Length: 426
Image 1 (cartoon, rainbow, N blue to C red):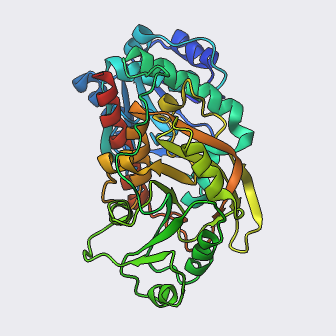
Image 2: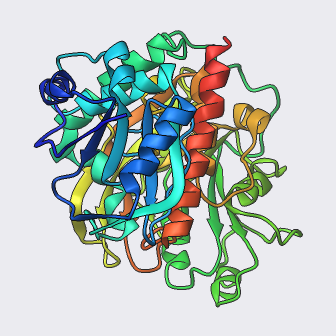
């Protein structure tokens, strides 16, 4: 089995097709030209062996001091980390073909088509060492896909992913179930839910932002304090307001999702629940009123707003406004399988949310619920900024160690995997 090694200038359809046309071997190795790669003693032989023995269409490997995660059917995001070196079976690639119209997504399209017919295999061995392509911390990289400067690129990636979902029978038409009327009377119209642990520097700002909301309907603020060990609990107890409910769970094994369950299954929870993270703020005092007005139309089981990135002092920072205008009624629920999150603030019809519940994890719990809701119901959008997302060193995702980032990515891929399976069975 021979090998061709190429370093493409781009990943357009025309470039990828040209690589396949000129390949005169069974295996095409694609290296990232922006990364310095030092192959190990038997890198190419090992990749060739795995392709031959597994019938894989696409093979990738760990790098030295850089383990990766296994590919799943839900690993359809365009930023999956294969590393700077992948091996592609030229026979498999020629069999599945590619769409010839993509400016950026030629290789992405090829990968998804290969995954439909052939295994994509990770070699959990450090076959090479490589320089870092992007050394920014996770807290900076995670917002690249919603940067307005990347909108054309992301629109193309959505088209590629949508075509894949249609081919595998997991694409859903824009037909939605009717949101049922409330079956029981709630104590208040809406509850703002804040899950918190050890946020003494920000929790008072968040609670004040919630309590400052002005509305013609009754609401409360449910703060689930997950056994904070700093001054968070003390600060919460100092706030005197009958609308504030300070909930300390009996259990000590709860993640953020478990804390949300403490709130939504509480007898004090309102007809609608609205999220506020413990280090974020609402833009003004009319946010809750605007959200509830949209939910009261009866169209949506869930609503997501737009937010502005700010620093700790609430000064706007790049990329600024994140409005998720890529979301459309026609395809939003399908594109949700490609991206890593739907935005903020998130609000829910409580009755529907109680049927699903949150997984007891501290990352991806909101994404899991959103995917499940979008399978059946319409999710609404507010495209104007109503939320201030503070980015500071205290963010739980500001600088994740590699093993943690890998675990989080694997979990979200798993969520997409089971959602794709469920949608394919409809």
